[in-house]
Image 1 (cartoon, rainbow, N blue to C red):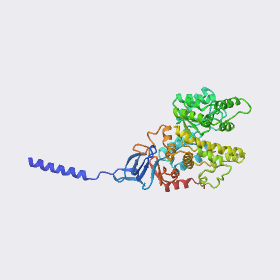
Image 2: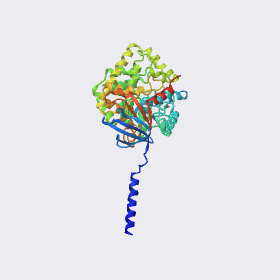
Image 3: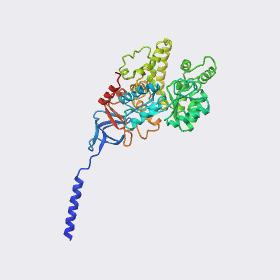
Image 4: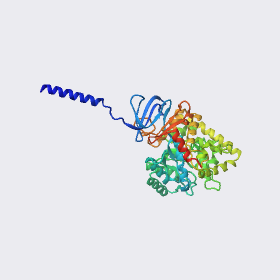
Length: 479
C-alpha cells in the first residue's frame, strides 16, 4: 500500500511537470508596436524600447521590449520611432448642407492621414450626417477621427449661417437648448452674427444650469469677463480675448452698445483698430488671471488668421492638398478669396499687425495658466485651410509664438481631452486607454515640425501604416 502511494505521487508529479512545460496559448493582439520610444505628453518624458499591445480599441499592455513574446494581427515596427497620442483638432467645421455632405465626409481621411484622431465640430448644418459617420466609425465601417459636435449653432434672429437656432427671448433659448439636448450634442456653440448681448449671456446661464459646456464667438456689446463669470467654458479665436485686453474696454463696449440702434452699428472689425491702440498689459493680465481661475479655455486658431491675412499675396492654385478637396468645397473658398483681392492695402497691413499681436499673446496666456486648445477652423468656406494639415501648422505656429514643443503638443492632445471630459480614457499611452496614436520617425520634442513625419496612425485600435494612408488619400483625390 505504501509503495503504491509513492508510485502514484511520482506519476502525479511527472504529470504536473509536463503540464507546466506545455506552452500556453499565445494571446493574439490586434496591434503590437515594438521597440518604440514613448513620448509622455504630460511630462515630456521619453521611455525608449517599449512594446505596446492593443486589443479591442484599447491599449492593454506597455512593457519593456523583448520581455515577452507577442503575436498580433498587425505588427508595427517602432524601432527608431516615437509614439505620441493622436492629435486633437478642437475647432473644425462640417457644413454646407446636404448637397455637401459627401464632400465633407472626404475630410475624415485627411484628418487621419495627418495624425488627427479626434476633432471637435464647432457648429454647422450636417448634424445628422455627423451622427451617422460616428456610428459607422464605431462599427468599423468607416475610417476617421472621433468627432465631438455642438450640432447647430445658437445665434440671433436672421443668423448668418444656415441651420442656426435663432434666439432672442429666454423662452426661445430654453427651447433651443431643449432641442440640442434631444440631439445629444457634446457642447453648445454660440455665434455672434446677430445674437444680442442679453441673449448671449442668458444662453450661457441656462446652459450651465443644464450642465452643458458653452463656447463660441461673442458680440462686442458684451465684456468677456461677464461671460467668463457666467460660466463660459471656452472662447473661439482671439478677437474676444483681445478686446478684454484693452485699457478702454468699458468705453469701447459702451460705444458698441450705443451704436446698435443707429444706422451704422459698430461690430468687431470696426472696433478692432481702437482695441489694438488701447492694448494694456495690465488689462491683459487681469483677464488672463480670471480665465485661468474660472477655467475658461481659449482656441487661438492662429493658422487660419495667417492664411486669410496672406490671401492677397499668396497663390494657392498649386497647393498639393487642393487635389484632395472636393471641387464643391473649393467653390466655397471663392467668397473669401474675392474679398481679399479687393481689400485696401491699409486693411491688409492692419491684419498683419493684428496677427502678430495675437502671436505675442500666446506665451503670456500660457504663463498665466490659461488653457490653450489647438484648433484649425478647417472646413468649407474657410479658404485653403486644409483638414489635418492645418492642425499640424497650428501646432507649429504655437511654438513659433513662444510655446515649448511639449506645451504645443499638450494643446493638441491633453488639453482637448480634459476640456471634453475624457482625459481618463484617452491621450496617455498606458493600459486601459483608447488606442488613438501616431507613430513618428523623429522626436517632436526636439523639433515640433516632426509631427509631420508620420510612419503610422492607430485609430480605434487599428493601425494604418504610411502606405495604407497613402492609398486612402488616393481614393479621395479628385479625378
